[in-house]
Image (cartoon, rainbow, N blue to C red; front, side, top):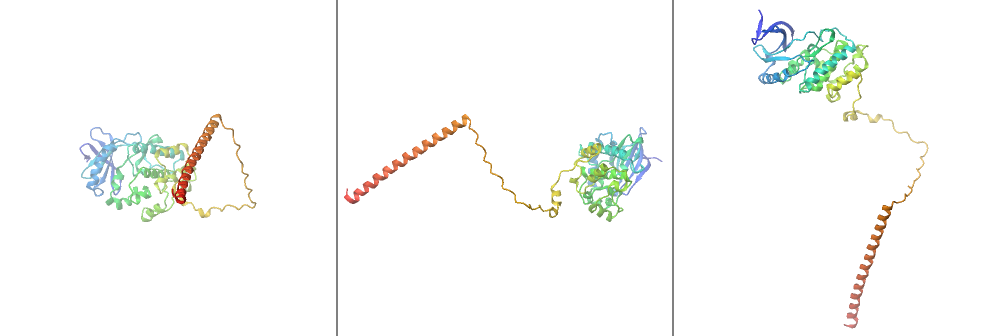
Length: 357
């Protein structure tokens, strides 16, 4: 017996199952159009999150890009919070045989960047890019990234952190998200780097399994590079992956547009030296300057030749000299007057004292 959701959607075969959600293939009741129905379980939800997800539905449904499946509907029901999106004819990245040829990896990564660029321009972060939500049509002619903003919103509340930490999608979370930060545009760049690594090697760049040791390793240890597991991986993809997987988000590419440009040019421009880089330099290892064996001769003092003054300069200098002469003459006259006055006063005092007049 077919199950009907909201009187509009027919639930058919189960596609995937995880602790947090279950995904079905379905159809529209009125048109038999294929759709995907993803239901997040009730135990992963709370009233605040449900209210936020309802607000997000209208924003996510407006994402318009040929690289993003259209979100059709979403609401809270007795099964949990469900999302309805268009069905993508193709295979998920998880199911495709690896390793994939570097040129094909580059093209797929460029399509992922196109999807992220369209979403980021509206302020939407994916937050949970995994091989399960990247779909590729036959012949690799069309790539689509699905489930924007959905898993990020469900996993972010504090009361879900412990559950999500051991969910399969947390394998793709960057260190800052594992430490409690909210997913950002640069965490999407990190996950794109992991997808490139996965396409080239068929595995993730960390050695541990999904346990607490894995979490500590991701935060502290340096990841592997694709060429360490696949000798055919070109140097430029090594460099791109390395930049994407920087533990400090500020050290990654500034935007997916910059990442896409490096994929097209097959080169990575050196980043500008930051204050953190300056702190990491060990100046104690800098070689001391060599002492000069011979004394350095003192440089000759060169007196610049006095250039002839222009006519205007001569006039200005002459005017300045005349002014100085006038000031000096005034000073002499002023001093003479004061001396005369002083002499008269002294003469009068002498007459009074000696003569009595």
